[in-house]
Image (cartoon, rainbow, N blue to C red; front, top):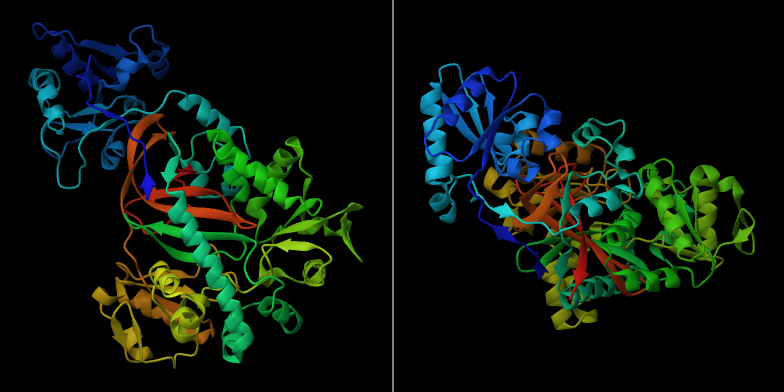
Length: 588
C-alpha cells in the first residue's frame, strides 16, 4: 500500500579518529592510538569546531564515518564506552560537536590510554568489517532495543531540497513563543526536524477507494439526518454555535450532501488504513502545496485543482485570526503562489472582514468573490462570519468546506447505532469496506448509554467504564464529539494505552460533568515503518523508525495529493511534533 524507497550500505571502516582540544583524557588516548604499529587511521586533535569543518586537516566526509573521542565523568561499563549517533539515547550523551561522526568513545578518568587505544583499534579497524556485514555494531551484536547499524544513502540534492523547504512559508513562526521552537535548528522555517529524502509512494486505486467510500458515507449520513429526528438531536450535542437556532439548520441541512473539500486522517496499519476522523475544517493545505512544490511532484494535479477552485470566480481564503491564526502565514503564501501561477486567490483574516460586503453577491475590497475557503471553525461563527454562512446557504457564494455536520466524530458511532439504515443504502461490499475503515465506536452523551460493546469488550454501565482494567483501557481511545475547541487538533482525545486509571476516570468525569458527548473507540494498532530522512539538527542521514499518518485531499471529487506525517514510533501522538518528518506522496 505504501512504498518507501530506501538505499542502504554497510559502513566503511573509519579512516579518522579525532577529538576537540581540551578533552585531556581523549587526547591521551589518541596519542597512544598513533603509536600502534601499521595503523593507517589518521588521528587528529582539532583546535576548535571551525577547524573540524574547515577541511584543511581532513575531509568532512571522512569525519562522518569517523570516531569522535570525548571526555565523560563516568561510563556505565568501565573506563570508557562506545557510542553511536544512530541511537537516540547515545545522542543525548555525545557532545554536539562529536555528532558529526557516526561513532563515539567516551573516556573517563580511570581509563588507561594505551588499553583504550588498542581496544578501539581492534573493534573499529581489525574486526569491524566482519561485524558490520553481520548487521552488528563494531563492538558486538545489537542489544534488545537496537536496530542494526545501517548507513542510509539519501539522494543527491538534499541540500537543495532543505533550502527549498526553508524558502517557503515560515511554518516555524507559529511555534515562535513555544519551547518547541527551541528544538528546531537555528533559522529553520519548517516546523519539523526530519526531512524525507524521497516522496512516499502510495497505491492510487486503493486510496481512491477509501476516500470514495468516505464520500459515500457522508451522502448516506445526510439521508439519515433527513429521515431521523433522533440523529439530528445527537448531532447537535456538543456543538458550540453562537447562533445555534438559526445556524443549526444550516449545519444539519447543508446545500451539498458531502464535503467538497474532504481530508481524512488515515493511519497505516501495514496492510491498509483506518480513519480517525474526517476534518470539518482541515488545515495544512498550503503546507502540502509547498511540500509538493519543493519535491516537484503532483504539479499537474495542483493546476487542475486550482482551476476548479477558481472556476466560479475569485477564490478568497477567510482565516480566523483566533483559532486558525497558525494557518495565516501559510495561507498568505499559498494565495501568492496561486497568483504567481495565474489564479485569482486572496486572503482575508476575520479582522479584515470590514472590507467585505454581502448583498446580492459577496465582494472583498470591491472585487467579486466566487468561492470562499472556510478556515474558521463552527464555534466561532458569529457576526460577519455568520452573514457569510447565510450568503453561502442562499447561493450567493460558494463556501468550502461546507458548513456541515460531516466532520462530527459522532458519525463513527452512528454508523454502528443505525447499522440497518446504512446496510439498506450501501452495497454489501461498501458496507463491509466502511466497517473496516471506521473503528468500532460507541457514543456516551448522558452516561445512560449502556450496556454497550466496543472492541469486543462488554461494558455494563458508566461505573464499569470508569473501572475498566488496564488490558481493556489499552485497547480503547476516548474522543470528544461535536464542534468545539476540544474536538479539534486532538485536544479532546485520550489514549487509554499505558494510562493510569485515575487519569482515565478523571477525564470521563470531566466530560460527564460538562455534558460533553464523547465516543469510546477501538484503538487500532499501527505499523512501524523505516523512513530514510535527514536530521536537520545534525545534518546526518538516518533511518527513522516511525508511525505514519496519510492525509489525502479530495477537492471537487479529485484526489489531488496527500501528505505523509511520520512521527517517532515510541509515541501514540500522530501529528504536531517537532521531531516528526513530513513527506509528499506520489501515486502509482
